[in-house]
Image (cartoon, rainbow, N blue to C red; front, side):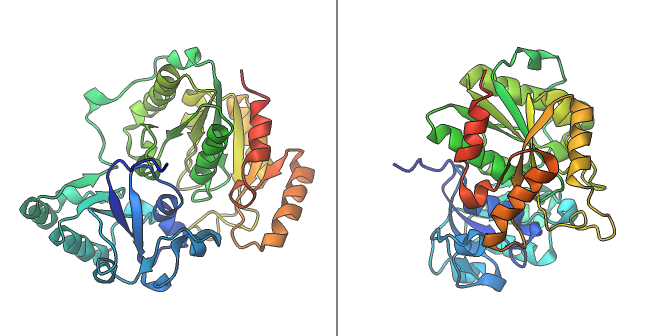
Length: 353
């Protein structure tokens, strides 16, 4: 029996970004979400195709349309979700016109961008006229709602891992969800700690949004999310979604996750075909061994597995590449998106407390 979505049907806007790093929010929602029932994606580049087939060569019944006008001829939705994740989180002008159209169609708007829609007087007026809501997921809560680090993380006594990455937009969140679902399918309890807007949109119950949180409270919000998940759910496993990478010049995420989330182990997501940091030509990606060393020196915790992002790779390249990574690092390597999570779940089960 399918679990009902939290907010109902949604059309996801990803024009000119689907199947690119700038469409990672749309990708997450197409692959999995409990918050919405995704009924269509908008991207003129892939109009007429199946979204799951475009992303993962697996049909999932979510059609792609060239425009909102075309989409509403075929599907019904009460939500319009911005699936873009461009550098800097800025909203393209063409998207603003489509948002206005969605409001005229009495659709609620959800956006995870840094350009807050509630500041746009025209869009807010349209929302009011049509009885719609505009939700800016990255809008920072008031300071009196935020938490400061207390040290209560030390009470958490279940297995706690972080999925970090060698770059941004590399699949950390997707791998984290696959691990969580793998544990649940094995009859165990697992909770996802979302640290970005997409995980929240996917329905992660315990979340904070790192890159829009006031710096003084980032550690406390991470600690609070992990502690609440442990206290309320009593899981066998907690998985913290990573952000950016330790040495990415624009998104040096991970330090607070290691310091405040205090994972027992780290899983490192890696794209072997990447040469430079995403979106920054000339900034050469640090080697996987350098990145493992940085994580272990900073945290004092071990990286226990590598998970593969197979972008730009042919299916027959995946397994030999995993073997090559194991030879280079001495760590087991898995492509959980292509081959499933069973082997990695077995590895993690051996560490359950």
